[in-house]
Image (cartoon, rainbow, N blue to C red):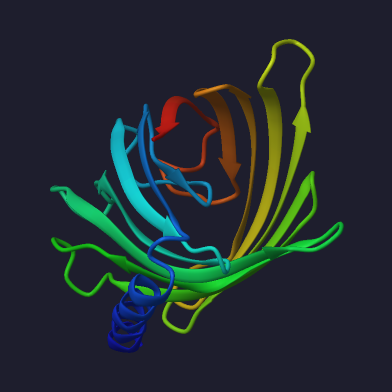
Length: 211
């Protein structure tokens, strides 16, 4: 599956670079968080994470890019980079948007932990419903609701609820609330799993910026 995704990304990169090189937008982002929490579970044993990515969006709605972060999983005493490669397409109607694509998660120092997902999302101005599926890992369904806050310009709050049906582990539900003020965020996350690192409520702060 991963080899097919990489071939697809390379093919799309060539086609889009030839046909839409002058119509696209290149975006670079960087972020620092006091904890890297993904689907309710810490990816850094509660420690800080530094991440960044590059994305190219064409005039026709196609996009592709890469993202990298440090990780340190519970089963390992050492860390590894996480490298995500993805390609997808998004669009917007009168009141409903969509987003679908493929993403490949790679962990160079964690042998055998790589996996690939396909995803599909429907979006309104306030709601995002997303379905992600991996033949190796399982299915994740999530709902995100964002509200603008009058306390400060650019402030918002996001409520998240997700359900993970895993192939090789117990299923669980996670939820979180995030307060965002421009480039800064304060988040609280909880997952109903019974591991030492993930059973308690997590609170973490972050900073992110796009260039």
